[in-house]
Length: 616
Image (cartoon, rainbow, N blue to C red; front, top):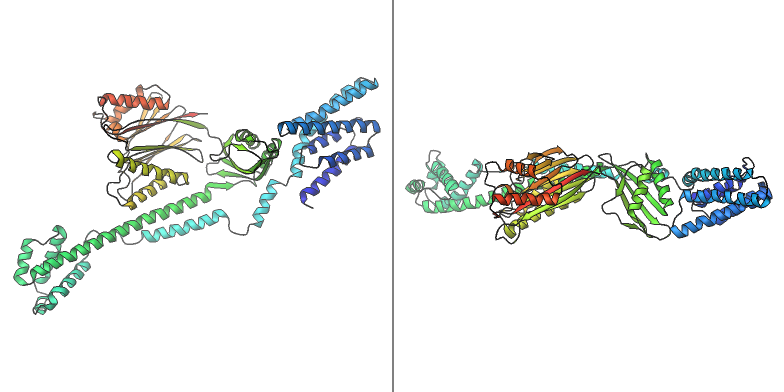
């Protein structure tokens, strides 16, 4: 017999034993205990039988008749409420027991025409029964259900392999070690080393001079002018790609095969230069691989420490959550509570409706909030309804701020598509990211460039990579692609909706602005676009946002054609005059003001992103 079955048997025994408890001629524990146990997953028929059997042993006949009717009425009411509403709250079951006691007491005393003061005793007994059910119900639930904490401890004992976090940490150290190996390899080469020059000289001499009768005279003596002539010949070919006329003329005065030597030297240098280019390309790819290995190590370390399982420490809160889910007719299993790095809670569980009805996830979020005593909201990818089939649910601690976004765009005159691409992302952990990319040039090619940048950043961020890591991996992918002219600016603004802190990441991007009432702050950048070098400079700055702030990102097409000495200062003045608190309307008004400076023309693609942040 399972542990839970043994607990149910104990409950049946207690249903008999409570009949011995008397209070001022009343037996409130009988209906109170019955109602509390009746709302749990037990055999109600057996519970009723054992309760009646206990009353038959210890109660007078008149009292037994009264409380038997109370138990029957209470059981029927609970069953009807469950049938109608697919669940029965504790206070409903408590009210059913209390009201049944009061009504049957009143009916009995009125029919017997006895002392009316007994009716007041019945009213007090009904209040006592009601309170008793509210107190006993959560206690009995904890006794009947296997403790959440004990389940967690049992799994911890049974787990023999290393924890998931330790495995990730080990993998991270392995990737970090590989990255160091790649990074410590040889650096880039610009010019040929003296040893390489010597090898090329030997190769030419071996092909041309070995068949000449004067070879021993030219090369065996250290004072021979051929060494100096070859040195000058190599340097002229390295600089110009061909031999200088003076060097060629002097060489022909010493060697009858000068034309063949020059021709062979040019061929050897072309082959050596090609090998050098491939060698440097290989080193560059090694550097990119080292960066990607570093990024993989970082993301693994971040995943290892992102969540901390606090289910065991917060077992009481989880028990409270499970009890409240039970009241709503939801069976909650595999329930776990995690704490993020920022201290915010994440609840994960598997749930199903006991009655097969569908319950909105928003209602369950309120139930979780009551149990955890924090405002909880459904996770990003959580189901909207819970039915009979078990589903996996996540609830995240609610943020302090919320945002609204707006965008306004203009395509360059006579261009088919805009070369600017943008994205608004809501990430796990209360992060809101706005990303903007301007592809070099305009038209379809620029559009493809900026779209690739935004898509890569989206994938990396949604996979859990940090912002800087995502930008570097995106840049590595663009460099590896190896096409000339694949350059794009990157402008990111990441807002923490728990704290209001905003981080700006800029790679060749135009200035950004923060509008706070009538004050406007400019955040500028001077870095190069992405895709040029495998190592890029990311300019990062942080600002604390407040309620009602507006964050504005824009492409350089908005500022470059204003034809004013200080376009950032002019843009600051424009933002100061705009009074709208609607992000979309503000973005449109910005472009309308810019068109006044360009006489209605659009000389380049223009995109303006605006995000407003407010406290909830």
